[in-house]
Image 1 (cartoon, helix red, strand yellow):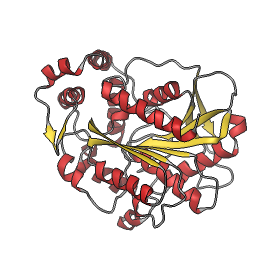
Image 2 (image 1 turned 135 degrees about the horizontal axis):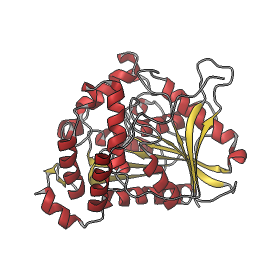
Image 3 (image 1 turned 180 degrees about the horizontal axis):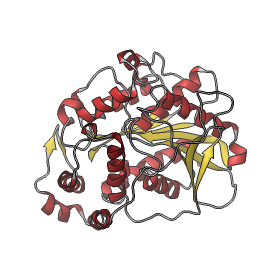
Image 4 (image 1 turned 135 degrees about the vertical axis):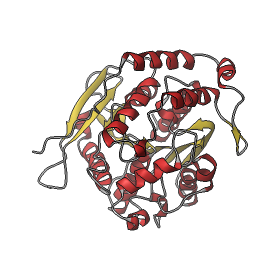
Length: 364
């Protein structure tokens, strides 16, 4: 059996990191009108006003920045993402169970691998609860189960369900479609072993942010196309859905709002094998020919996000095909707001709203 890669990046927070986190957490508890005094006049684009907590946070991050991810050595870029996520993660959220495990997916297939994962549960024991299988963001290149730990804890506690965060293999070590294959295999494993995992087999959802939202959407398409039992729900935060074209939101928000157009170029060029992959629905799920028969969905986009328009286009395609879908544009937020639960009340509100949609979709 092949050894799984580590689910942890090479990052240990320094005293300065801990002080930054404490300051961000404290500011995240303050009302927006006070933060606005420090953030300055709100930035307004496309009829939207940037949330003051995010405006102030972007100012802080720019001063602490080590540069752009695409200009760093890969190891440094990965550490920087972990540091950024740590500083906005807030106070720890205690749960009954937070357990690292390994999904035994390799079998006899040399192209497969056992994958690290982290299980979150609000209860002890094997009570069959609903489950969200979560795929982290980071452009298929950066991020980890650690960078999204606070997000998954928040969802598990607020939603009263189990969350399984999967550390799928990433580029450039593993190119497209490896991450897709890992995501599909992870869902199949949970679906086929629900009783052992203490999971309600009729209430298994998939979700993720950005690249993770992309993977969750593709899992739904791939299992439907294979004639299999699909996820019961898809929870898509700021999903990347189309690598074949750029939208107006790239022009409006491609610089200065955390995720940049150059970041996306770097991620896609690192992840894909060639430009031909951009037209593959496993990379660009918006290009799928058929949207019927897919699971119900909640799609949450950020108003100040280059990926805003393609995420919303995906929701409209689902709706046009008769799929039950709720689309919510959080006009004041940037990409990826789901990580900032400790630093911005609006991020917490958006995540709580999405969890409510998940509960409605899974009917529990």
